[in-house]
Amino acid sequence: MQKNKIIKISNKLVGDNQKTFIIAEVGLSHEGSLGIAKSFIDNISKAGADAVKFQMHYPEYESSKYEKFRKKFSLQDRSRFDYWKRTSFNTTEWHKLKKYSEKKGLIFLCSPFSKKSVEILANLKVEAWKIASGEFNNYLMLKQISKISKKPLILSTGLSTISEIKSVINSNQIKNFSILQCNSDYPTKPKEVGHKIVAKLKKNFNCPVGISDHSGSLNSLKIGVSMNANIIEAHVTFSKSFFGPDTIASITFKELKELINFRNMFYDINKREFLKNKLSLTQIRNRKLFTKSIVLNKDKKLGSKIYYEDLDSRKPLIGIPVYDYKKIINKKLKKDKKKGEFIKFKDLK
Image (tube, rainbow, N blue to C red; front, side, top):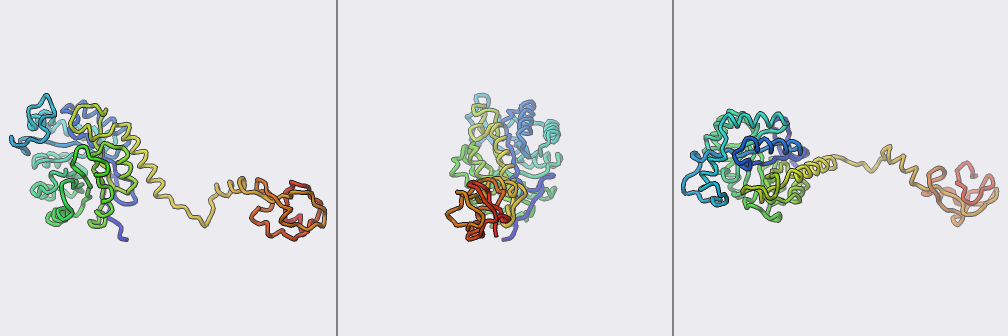
C-alpha cells in the first residue's frame, strides 16, 4: 500500500504514523475580547493541543444585507453583519494573538473568509491555511493564496462531494494540502460525523486526512483518533452553558485534555511492535516467578522410577519446568526425595 504524503505545519509532521494533529477551534467564541481570546489560548495550551484556530471575519468584505444565517442567536446584535463587526480584531490585535499563541507553544491558525483576510494572514506569516467548508470552492481566494504562499492548506469539506473536492484540488493545482471530513450541521450527531470515510479519502487523494468535528462529543473525537484521522479539529468552550452559537458543538478544556491524553496513548500503543518470537528481559524475569517447577506428590526412594502419577507442580521456576515433565518420565532417582521437593535433572539418571 502506498504511504500517504506527509505535510509539515510549523515544526509538526502531519500524516500517517504521526501523532494526530489536534486543532482547538476558538472561532468567534472570544466575543471580540482580546482578554477572553488570550484566556482561550492559555487553556488550550495547558491542555496540550498542537494549534489554536480563530476565524477572521470582516463583514464588509464577505457579507451583505441579505445574509440571514444565525442572525437571531444574540440579543446584542441586530444582524450577522453586526455580530461579525463586533467580534472583529484589528491587525495589531491579530499580531498580538499570534505572538501570544506562539509564546504559549501553540501554532496559530486562522480561517480567512475574504481576500482582505488573506492579505492580513499573509502578513502574519501563518504556518498553514485553514479553509472553512463554506470557502472550499472559493476559487478567487484559493488562487490568491496560491500566489502568495507555499504553506500547506487544510481544507474542510463539509459542503462538498468527492467529485467537487477533486475539481477544487485539480483546478487550483493544489499540491501541499490535507483534507478534513466535516459535517456542517451544528451540532452534528456523532453517527453523522463521517468517521469511516477518512480511509476512503486517504486512498482517493493520497494526503493527510482528518475530521473537523462539530458534534461536541468527546467520544466522537476519540473515535476519530482511533480510526487514524491525521488531524482532529474541535471547537472548545469554557462551559457547555457558555454564550455563543458554537457552544453546543464544543467540548470543554477538561475534555480537550482528555482527548490529548487519549491521542498520546493511542500513538504510543500504535507505534509499539511486539515480537512474539523473543521474550523481553521483563518477561524472562516474570516467567521465573510465574512458571511452575516439577515436584513429587509423594516420598520416593533412591532408584525409584518417576511416573506421571508421581508428579505435581509448584511456583517458582527453580527446578525442572513443568512443561518439560515428559523428559523425566521413567528416569530413576539418584537419591531419596521427599513429597513436595523440587526435582532437578542432576537428581536423575
